[in-house]
Image (cartoon, rainbow, N blue to C red):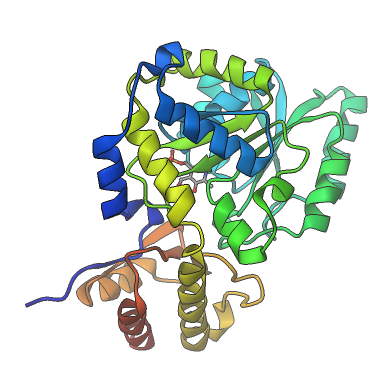
Length: 339
Ligand SMILES: Cc1ncc(COP(=O)(O)O)c(C=O)c1O
């Protein structure tokens, strides 16, 4: 019998746990349009406490949460400073232009966060007939650089350089960042006007992301969610899985991180010239360059391993609950023979 597919394409391939399925089946629900779904209300309050904001809101997806951030924190024509490889720039199908009419001011983010000096320089351009940026979007962990997590000092420096700008943190994998560093989620997002986190990635929920901020901002966000077609009714069946996720699935992310690091070591041994930095390899994404990604993915696929690319010449492996120790052994063995 062929062994099961090892799916390294994304942590979004995770499926709800038995406990989530039971919680979904028995969740008390109501019409969230009237604020009457007790399970949604509980999840929103729980998440707001976790990230240290006044309020939070359940949304169908991380992309929608990022788009809501753009629509609540900016006005059409604004310039948003953002790392050039962030999700909102590369992987949201140009939605920022459609949904918010903003111009993205791209800053270099190869080390996993924009540089404070670049934020200062971009703002100084306003003295030279260029539009003044009004917002700053950061990503923690930073997906395209291999799930790296900026230090608290780097975050503080960028925040200081962006004083006066509205700040959104795309924390699709904020809890990975928190578990990997031991730093509370609320500290990682300190000073942000809004925060988003996905429940549907390493936390294994079938659907859902959270958008958090002040009471006033989340009230505006509810309007924008409706405008984007994302308001839901008996969404307690989604929120129920989210509550189980926050309760039972956070600590185990450390296993994913440890396994990603083992895989990154094998990548480094096989291709020393593109070895991912093991110092920065603290969460669940392994990203590296390869000069024939098609041949590599084909080789892996013949070994029953699915992986993906982030850009031409850039391979990504993502660990998650479906990647156990046995899978890691098979991955390493395949990497050793890979082209
Ligand atoms: C950093 C980052 N932000 C946002 C998203 C979007 O989340 P979703 O797929 O729930 O729309 C993703 C998803 O892969 C992501 O990796």
